[in-house]
Length: 178
Image (cartoon, rainbow, N blue to C red; front, side):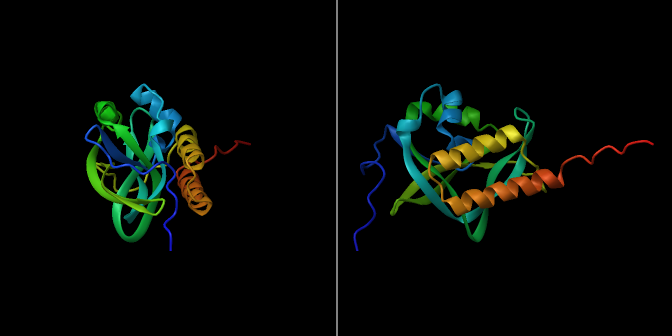
């Protein structure tokens, strides 16, 4: 059986580029441009799958004042995200954006092809419980997932997980005094 046609022409990565798997707000090329200083649409290879991990909101971002996404090892689980092929010159800006995270080398599947030696980021000091994201962060993550073509079922699961965290951590309404 023929393998699926890649979303971009298949070419070997040169020493001037690196693969990057984004699973949070960096899935959105528009938001990533804000940090890297240039458009990243051309660097998107396509939707990708990371096996043996799950998502969680195990870090509070001071900048965003809310919970932000992390990947944690979890056999049998998968994380959907976006695979980029970025120029090395963008690596320092990406590291700066991902303050509080460390490099992790993973293997992802994208469009029927395996990409080893792929960089992703995981939280260094994880919280014990998940922290709800705010509406702005949630919308950036969901926009990136939809824009880059993540599976619809996965997008719905992510949306429901976010919503359940927000409901659980919402402040109780004030009681009216009679």
